[in-house]
Structure formats: C-alpha cells, structure tokens
Length: 183
Image (tube, rainbow, N blue to C red; front, side, top):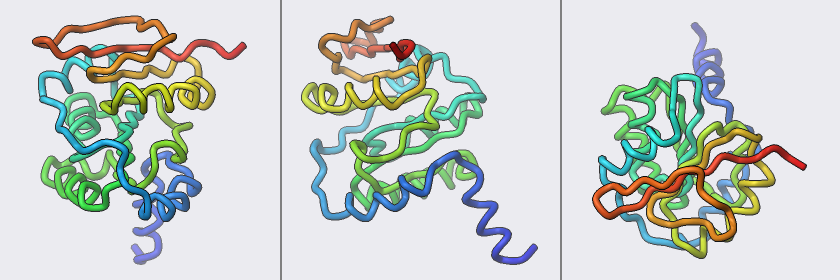
C-alpha cells in the first residue's frame, strides 16, 4: 500500500472535522484554565457506566489530560474516542498511553481548546473541569451536541441543568445529563 494511502487511512478512522485540527494552532498559545488532576480509575468506571458507553459510541473527553477516560472506553467497550487537551505534553503522553494500551487505532488526542473544538461527532462527552468552566461550556454543549448525547462530569454539577443521574463514588460525585431535543 502506498504511503499516501496509509496516511489517509490513519486519518479516516475517527470522525473529527478538519476544523478541529485547524483550530488547534490557536490553542497552542493559550494557557490551561485548570491544572491536570487525574480522574481515579473507579470514577472513570462510574462515568462510563453512567453514560452506558458501547462500541457504537464516540467518547469525547474535554480536557483529556493523560487520556485515561477515552482509553478506558476503548479498552472496555470498544468505543472510539477523542481527547481534546490544550497541553502538548499531555497530548504526547496520551498518545503514548493509547499505543501502550493497544487502542491507538480507536482513539485520537488533539491539542486544542475545548471551547472551539468541533464536538459534533460525540455521542458521549466527559468532563472534569471546574464549576466556572462547566458553566461556560454548558451553553455550547446544549447548542452543538445532538439530542440524546450523554454528558458526564466528575465532581462538578451544572447549575440550571438538572442531572438525570448522580452517582456517589466514595465521596466523589459523578453527574450525568442527556442533551434534550431541540426546540
């Protein structure tokens, strides 16, 4: 197979628009809004269970850190995944972690800004941000995601959007919402 065909095949695997890739250049100059704190594995499991992830899903993790949420979704459920992370070192770590886990063919990590990245292919969105960032991203999630898309947040609720489910994982909350039908 020619090198060009292999390169094209590598980029066709995940439904990520070219707009998301183009916008990553702007993210390289912006500082992160929050510092990376790893989500414990038991919380990752609770988030993916609450969202009812299957192999038919495309899981987007906004502020994906070391990639553990989308990597776990790929390993356990065969889901495809996209991590959006502003820190280039964490993007490199995530790609290495995906290769080591044997799921690099199912997941992709993009250096980008979660406020401008194209999320349209997501069927599940995961977050571990902050109360203020959840409030900033909420209107975009409600506007841009398809009805039925599940949104899961570790620790932080979203004021004014009643969670469909709340799960207590040893004192750490997981919130699940479903994007409603458009009016």
